[in-house]
Length: 200
Image (cartoon, rainbow, N blue to C red; front, top):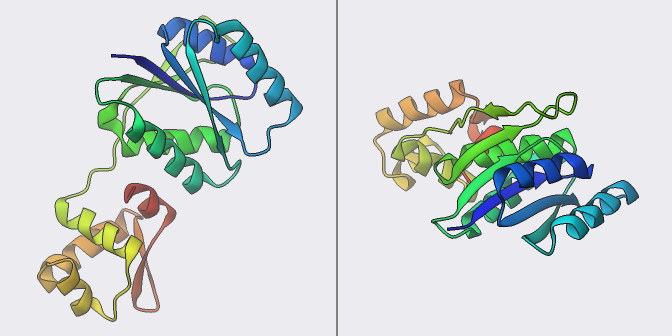
């Protein structure tokens, strides 16, 4: 079993602190598709400091596309062996990357052990964030997955494709819409950003 830390990065200090406290075996860092000099300098410092004792990998992501960031992070989590202990640290880096990583952790909350934030103004403090999750019934999952992949002509067609009665479909659609996972657009239902993340 390996201790894996997935972290956002801009400045090196929060990542070095988190990796040391966590007793990390493998460090996965989210860097920008086009890292600036500060991010490259921080990455070099981390590799020079920890690279001989732990495995360090980088994954390039968009900077502001939270859905893309979350999707990449879900892929990272899914590729980790099942017995790995995975922690998330959202201290360093851009807020959009931290939000994307956080959403990925919510999508795969059963795989995540800890979600951590280290306040930069008090390096001795550790804030453990709650492990929230998207909770869907099997019917709601099928609806989200179908809306993500397909199209339909009307609600009867959608009910047939997801194998639900129209009454059950209406109830599930209403709950998903009230929760902000889907929205109606000219009589058709579409995934919101939250729905796209939940359907990962």
